[in-house]
Length: 138
Image (cartoon, rainbow, N blue to C red; front, side, top):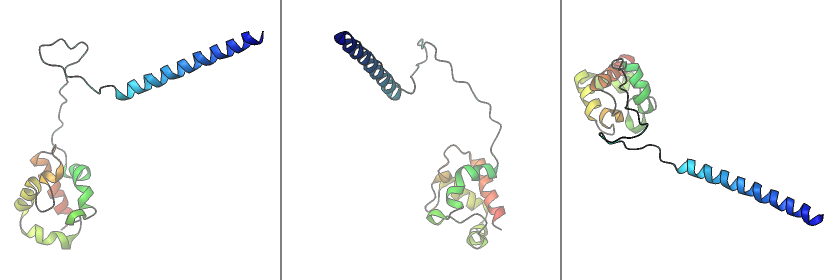
């Protein structure tokens, strides 16, 4: 009788341990699974759906671009960036003209990278962001 109970306990433990190990292996496979697949035109890629073109609602406002891309430096003064609203810091820059400011913003200037690092921003959006900062800093 004792042998049967011990055998049943060991069998139950073995089944439980096996299920736990299988679960751990499944979790590992899920963590290291590829995040995507390459589908070459002309090949049957199974269930791969064609990417849908998202409709653009037009360029973002200067405020939106500032909040998304410019605020990190222009709200803190990082790397010497003039803070938005700091008239003393912006005055000599504004005197150079809006075209110069926009050119610097698009192409980069001193520590600021081209487009302030916003590679997805259009030139029009960068210009709007510059205008937004200038208006707040006069």
